[in-house]
Length: 466
Ligand SMILES: Cc1cc2nc3c(=O)[nH]c(=O)nc-3n(C[C@H](O)[C@H](O)[C@H](O)COP(=O)(O)OP(=O)(O)OC[C@H]3O[C@@H](n4cnc5c(N)ncnc54)[C@H](O)[C@@H]3O)c2cc1C
Image (cartoon, rainbow, N blue to C red; front, side):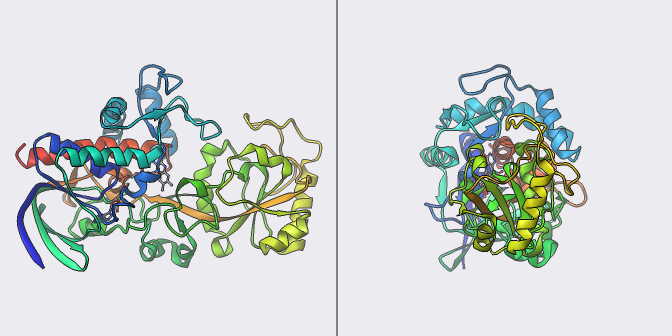
């Protein structure tokens, strides 16, 4: 092991959005900054490189957003999804500070594009990055390097030495070599623990083996575990995670956005026994897509199947994999390895319950619904009868976990005795649970990471004497 002293003023652990916002800000304040990122240079950027859009407060429409989106509406939306599981002080701080993000991001090389059509109805509240999160991350790395931030890839921080509530040093591994690194302050921006299957199994049991992780395999939660081991106060439900319906053929890690499936509201979903288990048309898909991961996780062997007919195809964005196609329902069942008689019976029963009903309108909560069917389908219910028939296998796709560390308005980590740690700051998914205790608002992960990344960078630099 090598021991280097006073390696830098501010050490940043992680290489995603929150880490880069912190590093750039701390460097601009005058501090020397070192970023340690587990990933290789090609795969740098954590889950942030899979993103597309960011939610922000703004007072008027622009070329890229259709209407104003003020503090109260933003706050109301947040209350709606969290059901009050949020720290209002930190939430309002995030919302207010988000107003400066469009300019800050553009000033650091991010370009915008017009809102994508056919996506999650975000035209008024969210800005879309041209080239997505990958382009944003590349722009930030470019700025960081230009301004003198040192970056070490393929370097995983394994342990933190913390005395009382003061960070002393970090033990980092690279190519089998360990190095102890000291700094005056540390910013932890190392994401959640969603890629750590054994840890997920502590809350989900064996079912977690069948989860697919949408983002980086590097978010193992090692830094989270270290902070909790040192007595930092946790926040958020350990079992809580954002999970969507994903194409079951997606890779185990890092499949990104293109493996999500949005076909659910336009057909039925059955488990491997051929049984329906939830109202596929309960509400607009943007309000429901994030509950389907959990619903699938609760099914036998954590698998389900979205079944549609040819008239449903134009109404949703397909996944990157083509659907399984068949001329009849029994053939489709065989191709998907569902019991053919069970699938035939459930489709017949469903079709009988919707015959004669309503005027189909995918843009509204229409009156196409089932009658006397359990569970019901409340909207967009049309008979599945127009061949060819299609099926997509579905798995629970984990986006991120909610467990994190408690912070204050300065992004300073709070110890179990309620006092702030002296020189330890956290940003991004590691502390998002303070603000987003439950549910999700599209584009808000980046908002929290950007706002608290900048605050953590500023405060860590200040703590280091700048
Ligand atoms: C497919 C997908 C699409 C998404 N789309 C959006 C979207 O459009 N808008 C939005 O707001 N949010 C979106 N999210 C959520 C968003 O990605 C996160 O909220 C946000 O990127 C978190 O940023 P972060 O910096 O905290 O973590 P990350 O970007 O995940 O970065 C964590 C970093 O820490 C590194 N790391 C972990 N452990 C260590 C260690 N021990 N030592 C060194 N480095 C370590 C990892 O390599 C990684 O680089 C999406 C997520 C996914 C998976």
